[in-house]
Length: 295
Ligand SMILES: Nc1nc2c(ncn2[C@@H]2O[C@H](COP(=O)(O)OP(=O)(O)OP(=O)(O)O)[C@@H](O)[C@H]2O)c(=O)[nH]1
Ligand SMILES: [Mg+2]
Image (tube, rainbow, N blue to C red; front, side, top):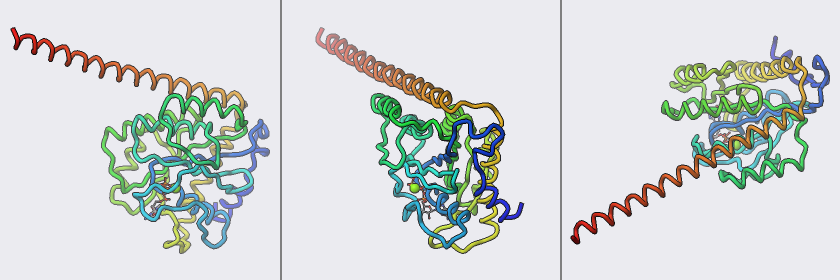
């Protein structure tokens, strides 16, 4: 397909025209997630630039530098009548404590277009899940998209933590995340790409985002972004060939989140208990040593 054919395929995609109609979905949400400063907001601006075919404009605020977290809200940006991009709040590092917050954003239980407080506690996460009952967001077809800056080196341990997150994202949304590697000129790119492949990622795209400083259109950049969006749309069309129930999917997502936060809370209590037990033993040893010295 040429660039203009890809653009009209994406623009004209409608859930109503899928094999069994829209089945109760009215929107495709591309849920962008990843570490802070890796290019989520820049990717949104790049997509808008390519699809709208208008002069470059900053829709999602981009950090002046990679070190400073910029996006604090879950903001949504309509790309077409059917597709909306969601700029989730990025996390500073991939740690156990952050994953609950990542999953509640991905599971779409946090409201859109409001500030995200980085809640890692049991009660807050549970409250978020319960509060989401008030709004019916079951009509969203969720597509997870993980953004990673290929200039960032990660240890094997961090990659294995990341793998767990991608697998859980698959469990929550029913789709293994599409991975977008930004900063495609990075020397580390081949190595990083291979690591994502080994994790089981099938859709990997490497690209250089457009920006205010670098907005000159290039055929190659346009083509890569269009190909990436086309693949995502094709995948949605393919999934919509099955009979689905958005309400049931929403309940299933919540069950996964519930199970996750309860398991995490049990782990936390166990760890806290083990620390306390160790302290008690130390106090006992100190008392015994004290007694021995006296006698
Ligand atoms: N060279 C290069 N710079 C990029 C690319 N993508 C993003 N950047 C730069 O990286 C910085 C961070 O980009 P953002 O798009 O704000 O990153 P983010 O993931 O939205 O960050 P948070 O909002 O903090 O979570 C900005 O200075 C961008 O200009 C890319 O593909 N290549
Ligand atoms: Mg951002």
